[in-house]
Amino acid sequence: MRRFDPTDAQTLMAILKARRDVRGNHFTREPVSDEEIDTILEAGLYAPSVGHSQPWKFVVIRDRQIQERVYDEFAQTHAKSKKKFKHRSLYAQLKLEALRETTVHIAVFYHHQGGAILGQTSQEDAGRYSVAAAIENMWLMARAMNIGIGWVSIVRPGKIRKIIGLGKAYQLVGYLCVGKVTTFLENPELESLGWQERKPTAETVLRLNEGTIRGGMEHIGIIRGSHAFLEPLQGKRATFMLSLSNTATAQIEGITQAGLPGLMHLTPTLDAEFLSRGKLKSLKKLPKTHSGIPTPALITRSIEMLHPFGRIEALDLGLEMSPQFKGRLHSFGIPPSGSIATGAGIDAHKVFEQGVAFGRRYTPKDPYVILAESVPSGTTTATATALALGYPARDLFSSSFRHVPDSIREQTIDAALARIEGLSDPLDILSEVSDNMLIFNAGFILGVNGRFPILLAGGTQMAAVLLVANTLIRASQSDTYQHSSFLIPHSSLNNVALATTKWVAHDSHSDIAALLDMLDFSIDAYYADFDFSLAHQPALKRYDEGEAKEGVGAGGALVYGLLNGLTPAEITRQVEGYVG
Image 1 (cartoon, rainbow, N blue to C red):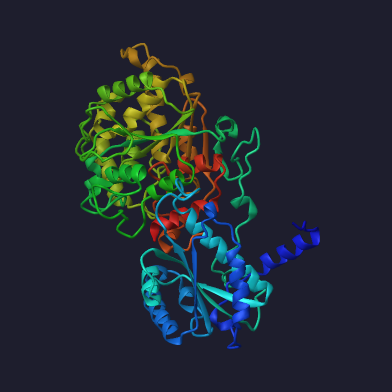
Image 2 (image 1 turned 90 degrees about the horizontal axis):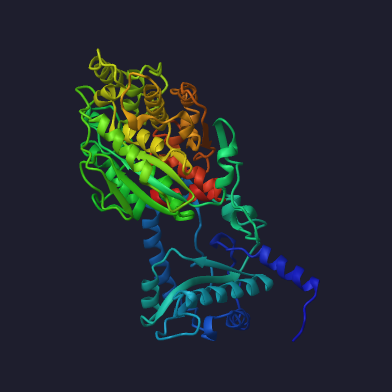
């Protein structure tokens, strides 16, 4: 067989780069001969196919009545598709077919033969991929002949099959409009119109050489410290551990938007289900805030889909409804806490000791743990907790709202602080004004005592966990404090860091760095330099405007993804796929 030279390769590359999906506004009515169609089909017949099965069926359609029926099917389906792109005004202006502008159509089907086919026993779709390769061959040959092809995909395959009169053994892969053209555009039309940019090579090519370390620090910002904590974690799997808890504080009207009004107690339950399963079991529809902001669980789930965590686990720290969780759910018999305005009613001594004990006995199966939370109104309880423990932090905590509902929040916090007058034991104080997540996780990270790295995935709530731990370490060092299980030095937190979102790190209404500066020890803290500037969905743009900001470990999950080579663009596209 002939060997090709570099000139041939250059010619082929030129054809590849010049191939275009031609729309109806660029076709002429100049006829395409049968001989030209046969040449295009011959190119398709020489495509690779799994097991040399050649599972294709090409139907050349010149019958105008059939073409009109196909057009009617397109028009009906296209009208429905517009609803899915109502957030993108350009969609209504796009010409997406050439069904009436071309005289020849080619419907390309996959013949599903059934039975065992060489190379298709473990990848059932390999036969369809073979047909797609045939279409590409046809497309390139047509371009070399200066003939245009447009692929019409906004049709229902079953309807096209019935219009043409084939049986169910045939499945439509591509419906092609073929014709002479006025011009071939210099760049893909959707790129020129601003619908979709061309992806950079670095985003689409992953090179795994010996010793390759995925990811880097390019998109990970520093709040405090250096990248030293993260460097050994590049390319490593992590156990994602989600802390779940309910507090009646969330039932105070207007205090949070982290969930559905009237069903706020379901927020952590649903977050756990969606994160572990990709779908809900306890409710039919994925919750949004009352203003239409999607849950940050979308971000964390997207990371799981792009680069899975080693495993996902959850901590039931007082739920009203247990989730149908896919993974290990750790339960401790802790009841939900009450409203801090009337008394949280927590046995903080017991909850803290449970956290310490769990930390001492827990050993992850992955190199490190990402510790996250889902606690509606948690920033309010975190603020009250910090203030009650003596930290000047009233204006330093973030909120799920863009504009914090100060009057409601302040009234709630003031009512909580009034309840601790005369109390001096920090755990007695926490029993009144805190939430289970803050207390348990402070115990957990102290109980681990640096045996493995822990990345606290959250914003100011996770900073509050550190403040609680800081206070209890101080207390343990007092000669008058009699809780032996608390005798843990600050050095036990040397293997703990914090990661949050850019929205928290740059939030003008809070100051996570100032909270961390109140600790008696230094800690590395980071943020994922990620936003939704590349998104098209208006609901996601609300994050960039200051809504939602963090939750369900979104910041820590993003940092994990970036450490494993994910790019902001591919993360954005994955999240948008969940929004619709």
